[in-house]
Length: 234
Image 1 (cartoon, rainbow, N blue to C red):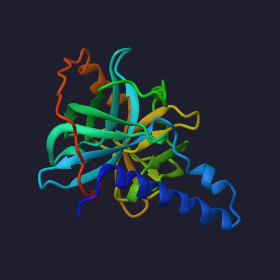
Image 2: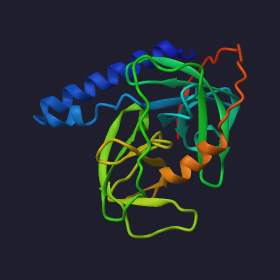
Image 3: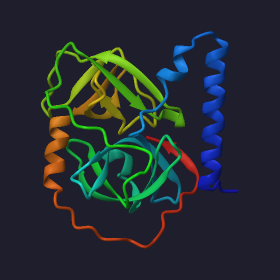
């Protein structure tokens, strides 16, 4: 029997509750609060060509006053059957959206939401470049479980402009996740990991994609997005 989206929400809530309870039993009172998702760090559900549902992570930003948007990784949506997706906020608010811009080279995707969320404000872009040696927060929903880590940016500057955070590994489902500076500003989008580093595209490159997407011609698709089984985390 295929799970409904409501079943997925209930199951995710139960897993999160057990996770926090076990953390408290261990005596680490900081762990549950450390992993509480920022209000604008979201989970993205995509209906794939094979009829199953996959998921990744994303960040709520705005193109302008009238265009609430999610930034995620392009490979999260690459095998999509439709441009319509569903976005789950930490408050359990669910909003449908439409994929409006992708960049396969930088592994980026912009999703235009049907409306602004009532339970979250967009994360502002950092106004400084990513700095080598400074600490940044990494946030994602690998396996449907929210997790936040902190690591320092490495010295290597890669050809495509992406950077790496050392000593932080990401999980399946973290793709598209948020890279935040220590003040909580958006500093980039996570797209991959090796054995002990997390790769991300810095915010200034994302800002270039955002600039190309304004104004967005908004086409309302009345067809609701109905997810099926959550089989794959990306």
